Amino acid sequence: MADGYLDMQLLRFSTAGSVDDGKSTLIGRLLYDSKSIFEDQLQAVEQASKVRGNEEVNLALLTDGLKAEREQGITIDVAYRYFATPKRKFIIADTPGHIQYTRNMVTGASTADLAIILIDARHGVMEQTIRHSFIASLLGIQNIVVCVNKMDLVDFSKDVFDKIIADYNLMSKHLKIPAVDFIPISAKNGDNVVNRSKNISWYTGKPLLEFLEDVEIKTQNSDGFRMAVQYVVRPISDSFADFRGYAGRIAQGSIKKGDKITILPSGLKSSVKAVYSGQNELNEAFVGQSIDLTLNDDIDISRGDFLVSDEKNLPKISQEFVLNICWFNATPLKLRKKYIVRHATQEVQGLFTAIDFKVDISTQEKINDVNELQLNDIAQVQLKTSQPLVFESYYKNKVMGSLIFVDPFTFETIGAGMIL
Image (cartoon, rainbow, N blue to C red):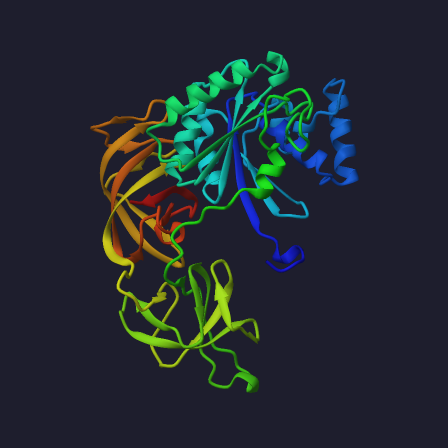
């Protein structure tokens, strides 16, 4: 990897846990000890801590940005924070612990590469631990780090830590989580957060920040090029006479001049004439890059079409889908009611034809005979759209397997789905 800030790898991670497990304090400690806080931010937190009567600087206030959160001492919205070390860049999503804010956790964790789940060492695995682990599994997060917090309140006991590991592994054995790691910490005092703790000498693993710097980011299937067309570029310029480019962000794989391309849903084929980033021609472009492609054939391509590798395992095309959904709105999901469905760069109408079952996210039990979904409900449903969509399973490609549901009258986002 090339040197320099822009070339560093980005790790997106979310935090979750039961109420008062110390999520916000942990993030505040990460930012504070890694020297990622501006002086004015620290002064504001010091002042807020004094107003609340705290004897010490309350690092949780670095992320609890809403007035209601500061007053109640809880996190109710998703707070995003950005920082970097010499090894890696990070985006943190501090998500709520309360069950009524399930939609906020789903939103914050949906783009995460890794999830940190906090457990209070005094209380062990709780109902909310199970719920947060289930949601992380549902969202296809490949790495989970279980931080056993407040170890100072159990005298840094190895037996307590080992029991929590055993209990968590027993609970999560049926969940689809490829990798789980455990770190004993005290967020308030900084033990094993950025610096290795002398109080936990029996723990031989890495402190949390070092772990985050070194962990391998497990990605979804990277075979085959996938890009949704966001915009057809037709500049009026002598320098680019007759230029017709297809702009988008690469969702999978890589692309270079000469590669064969299939346009979906039409099925027409061509090959790449050139790859551009702005006005600069590239030798090759990779997943995550925003590019313009020109093709060797004049084909009718528009926003919402997909450009994919000309290969045997092409994405699927359908108007009928089975998906997991989280409902975000206080107005219930109704069967046979028309909604706006957003998929990648395409927007169509759709309606739900059936609710297969709802999931009790605290026990993972399936609830049958459900006719509507309420706010924060998670369920498996069947959807029919007005036009065909080019898709792959969410667990194979998040971009091509994600659906957003929008109210056709208010244009408010009211749900999110993952195609199975």
